[in-house]
Image 1: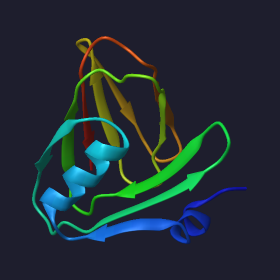
Image 2 (image 1 turned 120 degrees about the vertical axis):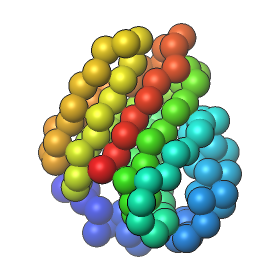
Image 3 (image 1 turned 30 degrees about the horizontal axis):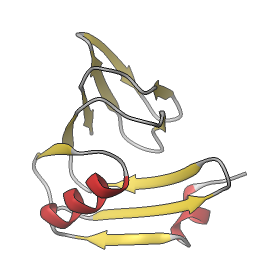
Length: 116
């Protein structure tokens, strides 16, 4: 079983800089805008690469909203390990709690995620 402890061994970013966090994630995944809420930025990003899939563990620290353009060339399967995810795509909202997942396939519309 793969869990966050295993992924921690593959840490590629630890930062308290909102700008550095944005730049690294934009390069790896897709261009986006981050709207930081209250709290100290404490980003930890880990990545494990397999032949046909990449697994990421991402922790921002404080509550954050992510605004992104359409995904291109990949699908994003998210599972919250702690906190809650509020997701909005094409005017439809979903809330995901710990252990629940959401799938964003390559699509033509932008989306918003709020992690808390």
